[in-house]
Image 1 (cartoon, helix red, strand yellow):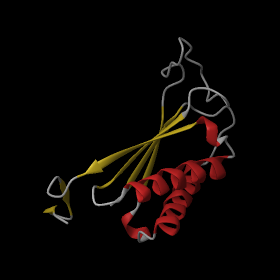
Image 2 (cartoon, rainbow, N blue to C red):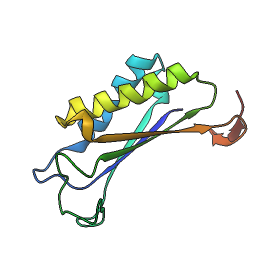
Image 3 (cartoon, rainbow, N blue to C red):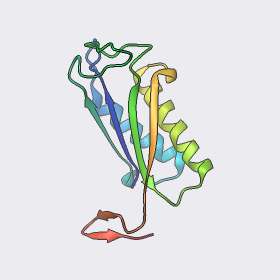
Length: 126
């Protein structure tokens, strides 16, 4: 069930995002022992100039500012240590797959509680 939602400004050099998001799901599955069929990833681009940090809204993704934003949604049964591992795996994968500095990636974890998720036609409880 983990969902990895990534947002960034467009890159100055066009990047084919499809193989990137596919690889991120596989990296996450391998690194966390979650079956790949349960891991989803999306990537959205902000419109040029629609992401400001410190009063600056560039057209393209900078190397050292305006971190790539990652929202990781996962079930609430994971331990703190496992959550830290998931955060690191996602950041490392995004960095590796795009060749960007891991220092310019921000990952946030959100928990999905049992009974608070609707999937495959029903409310899911764990």
